[in-house]
Image (cartoon, rainbow, N blue to C red; front, side, top):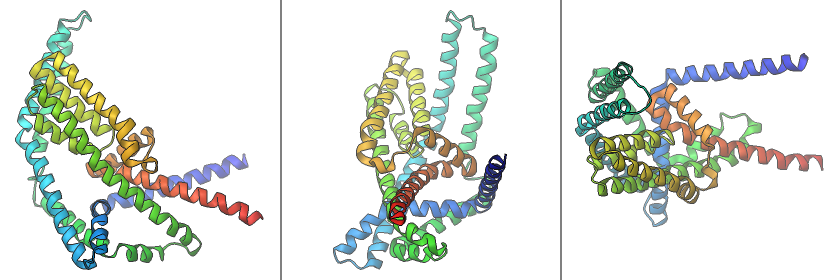
Length: 347
């Protein structure tokens, strides 16, 4: 009973700590997401700054040049993604609704004794959901001044945080270690570089894998004469930054569009292409590009994406998996470090 009571109290303390942390993050969600975005962008751009500095370019100049080119490139990619999605959103919505109608017709002709009344209720809900989602997407940025101000504030925070992290990242890390308890500083100081290498590998690898996924599936869709090949490839690229869930959603969208436009055979071929690319990604690209240090169990990926999405929307879902990968690296390092120190203390 005593052991159970102690375990119960510890679980309550952990649950209370997690609850307080969640409430704190929710209260300053904009700040947390901006800082997380800045850290991810820094992980993407920092090798370029280091390379320029090794070739004799001053640190400040290398930081400004890299940040300027990086943010311009990221802005162009973001603009292209938004342009393609919004410009073809009506066609994508029509394709989804057409897919619902085609599926309804085939189910009525099937031997499963499905009535038209049952399908009408389902299709009405699906159509309403698709229509309301498209309305939300097309009007997402014009709901009011507060949304625009919040977005611009987040962008400015991300830009300035990235500049400081690129220019003075090591000193910022050493300064932040002062807030940790003195006995924990050596362990955290050793875990920091490993965590940063994991994050950098994840960011660079995810960009490469997202591009390969979009290129392979996009070319397959194009050669099968499926319409909206470029917008679908753009959606696949953007969705790849939400592991597992993004691939399923974007792949399903491509299959539905192929089914409506070209029929069942083409849809099955698109499905084979999507599954083939995902198998290529899971068994070859991820182990080769990301390496073992970044590998996270699929269950942890799904749970972290769900938790991040519930806490902070799409931004939280994007940030969740690299956070889990970094935490996995840090915990593994600390456990190995403790395991090495105990035999030394006993001897």
